Length: 418
Ligand code: SF4
Ligand code: SF4
Image (cartoon, rainbow, N blue to C red; front, side, top):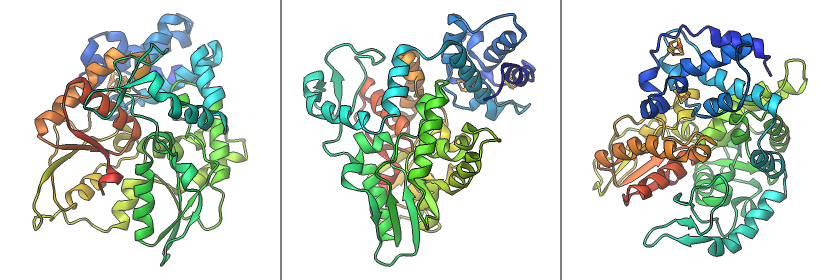
């Protein structure tokens, strides 16, 4: 972890030109100067100089950031503002500790191998008691208030059978050409097993044998984004050890946010002096997002699906972690354009953040909904019947947004579409 003076020095490099303001999703909705990148960086600089401190107000301002990276993408001076803001959150957590609810969720729930599946299994059988079905829609609402979860939010029902309970260990392809590991991710394991099931089927059909460690855990991103570095460090060790299997050439993550965390952030969790860092570097170098992997596996997509009747229109939302962090945006579109029976339509501002932002949408639900409103408008204007994305967080957010606006459109993960 960087020191306060190192982080403050990075923040000081911002020349406060304001070029990034027009694109910041939070600023566009609030028009509050402290909430744009230069405002937050100025605040971090002030804390570093001793002119301010990590108090409640500073914590609130730092929490009002999606870590979407739009500011960094548009900064003419190459300031990684989103990374500096995340580092400042870590320093704040180190000084003040996590809130009670975050501590309970990150330290005790995410970090435990048995507790989360056990609780969610209990939840799956009790969900009809606590949740009510939304009439004519596939989703649920809370019956009673629950901390951090707004009662307006659409909650997809927990899966009857979790993916890792049904599939684990080696699954061999008939004519094996490649061996990979599958990182399932929490949303696909507990809510939408069909995402990982689709990935598994596709891989097997193309001669790819798949290793699915039963003891794999959450990638740790929700905790990392909130400034907790201990939980993701512990999860990273466990995940890296779980995938320590001979012959794995790649480790595929269908969720873009998990892929970004595993590939870019895992090595950073370990000090350079820690021997485990090199183990993490080796693990991370094998991690690849499913759409990038499938783009290579299925060959160059022609985009010529004209011989088929185009019954439905499909559009695509770029997850920030996939487009800005991993630089992948062509592959998902090419894959969709090559699908028979579908017409691909590009929505306006497809790369604009949907407002999910991990714990951002829990702590700032109304603001998150406002940001999401623009995305929903783009989806509506595109005329698409189906909206796809490659991140499970965006998937949940889009489902919620379309429901809030009363739009009956299907939301599907890209891998399921393929
Ligand atoms: S990361 Fe996104 S939300 Fe945060 S300051 Fe930058 S543009 Fe705004
Ligand atoms: S983060 Fe970059 S674009 Fe934004 S105000 Fe600072 S220097 Fe300018």
